[in-house]
Image (cartoon, rainbow, N blue to C red; front, top):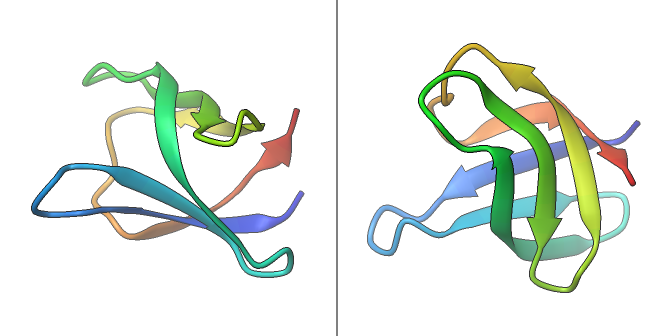
Length: 71
């Protein structure tokens, strides 16, 4: 499971996922659990790929580095 960085643009609110070892940076278009609690699960990227992060108790403060599994 690679470590990925998630960040949110302050102006637009868009979330980006970055995988350093693959030099991949893509916008997140959907989050499985986007509510205040829990937050996380399956993340769908703009290019159609999907990653899974363990759901968290609440939305984290960004930027954050987490382990993700490509599904």
